[in-house]
Image (cartoon, rainbow over the protein chains, first blue to last red):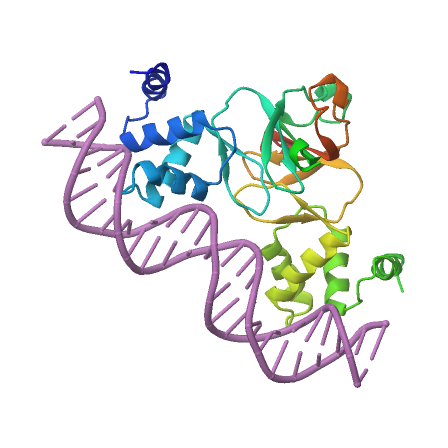
Length: 137
Length: 137
DNA sequence: GTCCCTGCAAACGGTTTGCACCCGG
DNA sequence: CCGGGTGCAAACCGTTTGCAGGGAC
């Protein structure tokens, strides 16, 4: 069994989420790619490998994996859900021209005391940069 | 005519967008509020003042106003569109508990040279902080 | 054996569209 | 008067749900 496969099985066990072939395929697909596909694009991709897998399972499992923290939803254009299996801290860049979403290195938010953020209890910080990506320049 | 009304008429003229009573009401409503309602909530609100105004006009005009730069779309939960007429630079805070979206003071992104952002042409920066708002703490 | 997961199809809900009429410039 | 805006209703499309059968543990 590959290193990736063992990693995924371990992650399922650790997070108390049941192992199924559909979930395995989904997470493997996301971990191998960094193009932040939408839920429906993911459905179409994995369907090539497992034609009987239903949309419902894709959507259910994307939620299950999000809740387990193995995947996260990323910001995108047009109110559609895009997903990312890179759970290391990072930000995102969205290209105005091709709408691709790319990962950008992490940077810290300002300290709460500095900026009038004192009144909030802050759990997470996410930045979105927009502009033109190298390919579209 | 009120100061606000003159401001709105001027903004329409400057941006070459035609003046209609529906657009006026929409923009006035957004400028008077800072609660970042969803498109549908906006429809319900303005409908109390202009019961014949249709959903189509609300959606069309929210787009028209966005394109004219008089309004912007803000990040939100659940793939629904929320709008904001505060066009000064600022970021947003989303409460995990009540899902309210609040404005937070502007802060700058890191300089491109510092962070591996060199390869992008950056046009805009937007940060989303999540956590618990003062009311829900 | 139990309970959760799966596939299917239908429902849902926010948003968009087609169209005839209307109104601002 | 012209061209874009409006109201209405139906279409759209990404997502969720109900349900009967199946697989993980």
